Amino acid sequence: MGLNRHVSSITKDDFVFWVAAETERGRLNKKSIKKAAIKRGLNTIRAALNHAVETFPDLKSFQVPCSPLTKKVEQERDRVLSDEEIAKISGALATKPEWHEALFFFQLDLITGARMAELLRMRWEESQVRFGTVKLYSSKTKKWRTITAPAAAALLAQRKTDGHGGETNVLTHPDHWFREILREASESVGIRYGQKVPGAWCPHDLRHTCLTNMALGGVPINGIKEYAGHASIVETQKYLKFMPQSVDLAASVSTRLASLANVVPSSNNGNKKNCSIKAKRTPKS
Image (cartoon, rainbow, N blue to C red; front, side, top):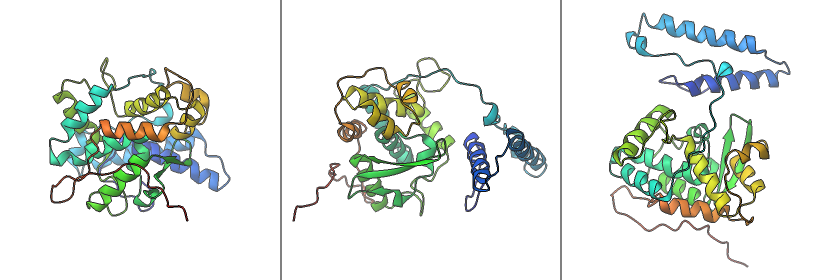
């Protein structure tokens, strides 16, 4: 799936990453890669998976994802989690130690409003608690962005201190693991989950929730656009239903969301500590 990228299971996101990598390869070689060429590559992957069934019978139950190049445009979603729902879901995720990483993902995604793929590829060095910043790379726009989110930076620093996560990457589980845990935790508190379930929510709605709360807090639409990493204001407007008088409150809104999601870092011995999620100020000389 790419240099130094080991894949133990294949999901739709792996195909998306592959298409992005092929497109980038063409750009670096200054040669445009046609859609037909990428589709031939996808067909090769499918053929390899079908042949692998002979050696790995378990793959018979695996359905190869559709090509992202022919993905149908999904109906616009505008599901936003309420304060009560956020508290219930984060509380449910905190009930089982084995769900620790799912709770961390829920909190981090809610605070940063990042795309799921952006968090799955995040590395430790892309967060600076001293400055309260987090760097995110979008495979969709092929660009880096740095957001100011003191609560997210503090949460990441505490996770590393507690010895959780991987050696290089912050998260260690694939996307389908997070989706399954979020579904189980959500349904345990009576909140419907599923992208195609009427009135339900899915991980991408954490992004909707974050950006909509910023709009409600008065953050200017240009600021939300940069925070979200959108290519245009038009894309940002799809997420927003309310636009009060503009005030730069992105950092404070993310901190409030962190509090709602019960961001209380725990040490390895299980003792809870108080953790300040405010950005540290450098003393004046």
